[in-house]
Amino acid sequence: EIVLTQSPGTLSLSPGERATLSCRASQSVSSSYLAWYQQRPGQAPRLLIYGASSRATGIPDRFSGSGSGTDFTLTISRLEPEDFAVYYCQQYGSSPWTFGQGTKVEI
Amino acid sequence: QVQLQESGPGLVKPSETLSLTCTVSGGSISSYYWTWIRQPPGKELEWIGYIYYSGSTNYNPSLKSRVTISVDTSKNQFSLKLSSVTAADTAVYYCARISVTPRGYGMDVWGQGTTVTVSS
Image (tube, rainbow over all chains, first blue to last red; front, side):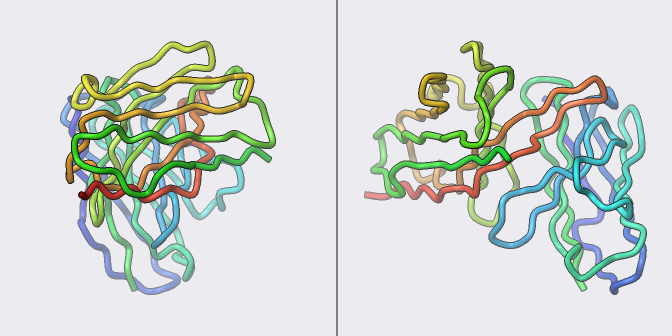
């Protein structure tokens, strides 16, 4: 099973600042099979990034994904108030599909 | 636009079978993969398994002995059954659509989630 480790656990930032979230895999993951999700309190997750770097439909361009192999990054260039949430990475490259433990972006 | 809605009992007794249905509206269940995800209180997301509209499945090995996912294309629904439940199965259960493109995979449409509590 591929374990995804996200860091930091919590990121304390202010609106307008840049957020950099990390996702490290215990084994190499094909870039096509790495996705990022945002989850606001009480809501279902929302797909942000698929294929490590492709934005999902309707996702603002302040969200970007990068990385390959075992190291992936989600960057939010300028935080908006609605971006304060929990972010999860997920891999589809190997069964069972697994999620990271999440990074909470808080004010 | 495609919407998903989970339905089923919110309370299940220990050792019984949890049964949930996801109804797909605004689009066809055909030509997509569909999946179930759960999230225990205060914890991260856990993938349960997926089904293709044709009926082929793949389950998380940690749950495989207790899980069955099925599809009913005539009703535009897919379902989850989890047997022999314990308190550890208490969670919010989500259904979602899996989008498969040349650039990669992603769960691009989600239901709102349904809370299932296992308790006597």
